[in-house]
Length: 511
Image 1: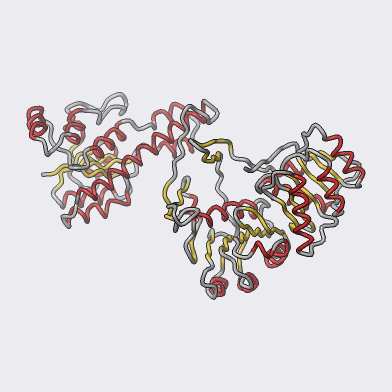
Image 2: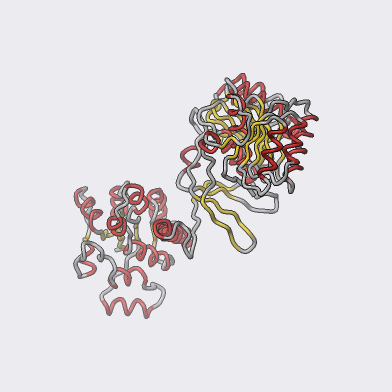
């Protein structure tokens, strides 16, 4: 008779799984709460003490750390010397191990009590998982509730192959690695400000992308927690690696203004159009005016619901991606007229952003890791007026929009906003004055009037030339972090041109 050891924190489905194992000739060994649940449900089971010949001790800290358990799991069935030694020691085989671990994540989300947190670090569970995974040649290791039914099917159909057990082995080591990484990261966050000697970045696979940035590269999307699985729905098409990157940049901008009717049009990770208006239809129409050429084949992020009227308008040009809070069925039908468009939604009236606390970037030979950058509303609200002229209410709104968009746009960048719509943007330039002049040149080509616009820069202006360039376009208000050794010259230039100038005192480089 084969034997299965069941010891789970998440007890969903465990009774049915045990019943099916018994039907297929398995004897059940179990521990603690799992054993109690099985007995109460009428499943015949042996308590772990009978196997270990030693009682659970130290308030349950030690119960499966025992040679009768690990010997039963680890001895090789293909080596006669192992079989002989097992017989000599009275070690019986354990052929299936089903373990999921103490709920460490749920504990740290629920309490800050360090003693309780320590007690919810599983020791015996990971040891059993690793033992069973190591001996996958003979042992089935089960760490996922969703695998119960497929495993029973494999057992019953006599297709419990080595390849199948190998796939469970890989999942098991992923499981324990993620668990230990979570503990290490938590401890470093608690005691080392999040920057310990080791840093672990762990994600769950959501899907393969068609390819990476280019066709010769493989790619896939991974998520933290369950952000994509809970919120992100594919309605049409297949998200590519580049689509995911562009979507990320666009939704961060579109959702930066609370419940406002905001629309961001993005191309290659940078905004080429943005507006906030009374309706989403108006917002999209105004956003498109900023750079309709770049918008062709771009990504549109809508902080709200795309209806039929809006879909008809958006279908006037080729868009590669539309991502929104929701897209109505009528709008989806309209978009279906475009073969190549891709549609995604969050299943909510507004875009849902994750709350990532950290960010990182690959560099040659490693990665740099940092606290996530967040643009706080008070940075604009409490910005210091540095000139004699004060911005009007509309100009203050335009400054807020320009500042937030600039903070989420590749440096060096400047953003011009007028009447709550972006009218010019220069990004990714090596010179800030070039960014300012490039933006104005593009606006002129598009026939956009930037007079009276608000200008934002994500970092300080090192020279007054950017202010002078803005003055030639009759910009009325400017916001920047300040902090240059030539701030006095910048302030003087703004006063000369009759502009209002605000310093936020917070820089937002995005490289």
